[in-house]
Image 1 (cartoon, one colour):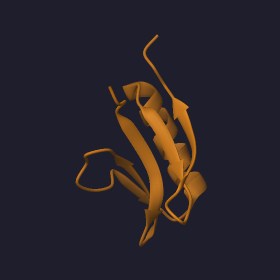
Image 2 (cartoon, one colour):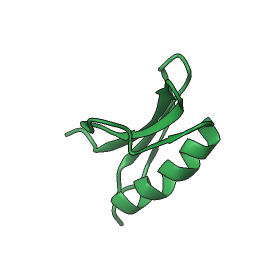
Image 3 (cartoon, one colour):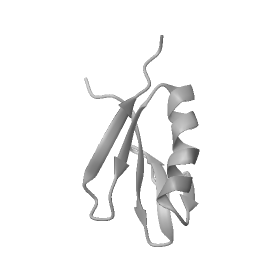
Amino acid sequence: MSRDTHRVMPHPDGWQVKRDNGERASHVTTTKVEAEGYARPISQHQHTELTIHGLDGRMQRSDSHPKR
């Protein structure tokens, strides 16, 4: 079973935070650091995987935030 995932990905206006199967970004920022700062607490609260992508779209790293 695959985990529900939030992703930090490139966006035409900078960087986006987007949940898998979401139609559009939940947040768009000018920097990747800002997007990560916005995405991490959401992922922790919603117990999702957080995947960070690079400018080339490739996955750079991933953090799990399971229920405890």
